[in-house]
Length: 206
Image (cartoon, rainbow, N blue to C red; front, side, top):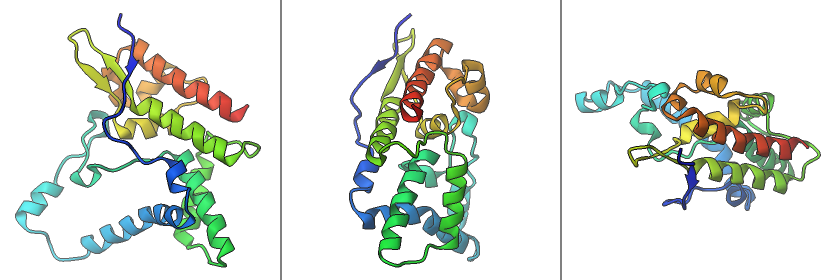
């Protein structure tokens, strides 16, 4: 059996270390989900779209088949752990500027903190950022070559879902049940993917 291999990415994804390099960028990044939600709400309350636009928006979304609407094209999906770090950073920046956090911001922060399994209050924030960035890089560049010579990789939604849902004791069968699209990979490849996450989680919590 051919082992999964890593290869350089053709397109560089933004890293948390880049976002956290400036307080303003972090605040903008953390505010983006709320801004997007507001834009979507405004669009829904407007007049009906023309037939062509309606047909485009009628795309059937199915995460199990990695089928998403056009609004998800070229979107950089973050895990709960990454969002938690960004929100914490921008919250500190807001406090330093005597700015009050929006209620939606606080609710989002509460949610990601509740479901964040990759955190350690005793860990240096910069070290945590590097661990999360490195894990995302490893998952994004993961490649498995099939017997037919084709390469399979992980969709960005799968990368975020894996970082959100996998625990140190998660087995292959459980991972596929949580993320059905992984079923296209051989079990050995999924176990390699889980090993990447387990090793990172152990380093973070230890």
